[in-house]
Image 1 (cartoon, rainbow, N blue to C red):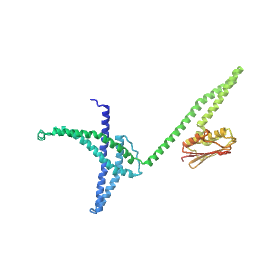
Image 2: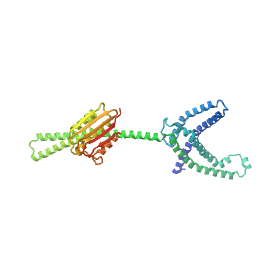
Image 3: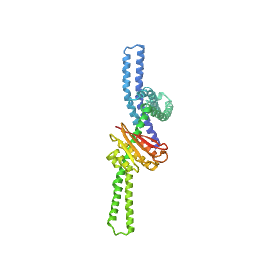
Image 4: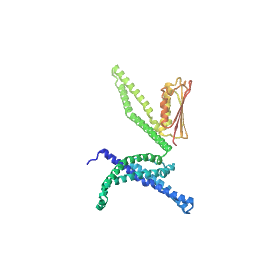
Length: 404
């Protein structure tokens, strides 16, 4: 006989819920028994009838305090194993929440669990009343005529109770799945702090992964496409120098191809440096910024005070900020003739300041790349500030946190 899938799922869920509730009865009511004993001892202490009651009360309370961590760990296991609910441990913060669960909510829940489990056992026994009756001696059946009718009524009542048990068990399990994690798990502030920490760590991992991907692309371009273009340019230059008897039209085509190859190499070099320059890893931020200032289309005065190297991710962000800011000065700063770049590492803060002598009026929302700069800085918990009054000067200030 094959059980229908829906019936099988219902039976499986009922077994899970009843097992969860049956295991919760002793765990919840154990603390209730301890509290009942403590209340009795406290009453004797108040009345003064027993001189040993205060000592016994103190011992009971100490034992109850020591039982709370064990009961909490068992509840964690019960929720995780039977319901698949992993309650995060709250450590030593706010122990009154766990004590309140075991002493107050646990007693109420244990009572409800006992009622549901008792109804299940009562329903099973009552629904089999007809079978139990026929197991009695025949003399009893002769002396108690009409037993079969009463047995049928009891069996029907037991079946009705059994029909109500799955719904009651499911409702109680849903109630416990809300109350348990709320009181045994971390509180709202702890959960928020843990969430912030998780998001910070995941964001830091994403930044590191993106930086590693840029490094990989830079290596692939430098070792692959760039080398091929250099080889092509060399071959074209060698052919142009050795083949002297070519027609003028062919020589013009070769010269144009050689110029295109050289321009492609230069553009690829700029692209590689924009992704992640190799000198940044090899010599550090100071050397990378010196090369950037030397290649800028306008005079740049660089002042760097770096007693130690910042983290690689921070170095990459600082380099990107200076590179993009100088590009913006060259493209958008009206009548700018020079730029000053100051990089200082003081304590745990790397401060980068870029100032130009243009006419100002830069708009962060005007598509000048300043929005991208701010987003890049915020990716490492940095702060981005810009001042660009009409008439100038324009100043971009960035502060990046650096771990010691």
